Image 1 (tube, helix red, strand yellow):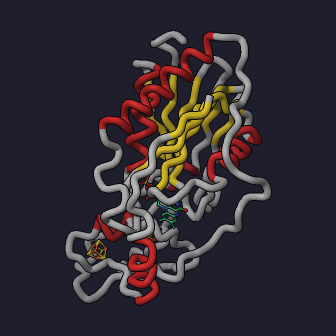
Image 2 (tube, helix red, strand yellow):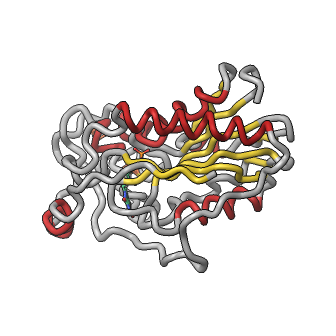
Length: 256
Ligand SMILES: Cc1cc2nc3c(=O)[nH]c(=O)nc-3n(C[C@H](O)[C@H](O)[C@H](O)COP(=O)(O)O)c2cc1C
Ligand code: SF4
Ligand code: SF4
């Protein structure tokens, strides 16, 4: 593949782990990379068509072994037999059916999945799990995926690789906790602007629409006063139960 070919880096990435991998993969494929941040609701509302001579690199975090349940996540995107390199980024537990689901969603929108990878990033809920990822070895694996995908596109055989995951996909879950603000809120609006699904009221940013909330915790990170946090025994119990079970570092897997 020509190093000047147009590659678009597409990602949904509330806390930045997925974005880091997608940019690494896309940067290894071309020096002409455009970024399309699907984390932003206003970007998801736009329409974007891709031709057969373009390439997209598309990454999502794994939520409950699935693609995050974000309304209209890919609805604005249309491919025209456009090759797609896919990335599922997870918090060191498992990706389960996320790559299979992402490949199906892409194919339904006119993209042709030609290569994919699973990669590890810090887990949203457990500070210790996946800390420091992506490290240099992870970045090298991401670049290897980009280079091998580019080589594959030079050849006539663009078959979809065998991807892990079952159909029907595992059932989507909803964690029994979500963040809210407390009296330390100074109404700065940082959480409102950060939330990828507009689940925080600009009138009262201490409130959370628990039906819309993804539990991505981007608002907690954005809050400068410590007001927004998950204050729930269910959350503490989940952390206690899983933190020890997930310490063994997992390694990236590439599918070509
Ligand atoms: C609601 C939710 C569900 C998650 N489910 C899984 C999971 O099933 N397996 C896993 O390994 N990590 C899981 N994670 C961790 C994320 O996949 C991981 O932290 C990811 O890197 C976040 O991506 P981002 O930094 O691009 O936002 C989950 C995170 C959230 C918020
Ligand atoms: S309110 Fe929910 S969806 Fe919005 S940023 Fe916070 S955790 Fe994420
Ligand atoms: S980021 Fe924190 S302080 Fe700012 S509006 Fe949100 S809850 Fe309040």
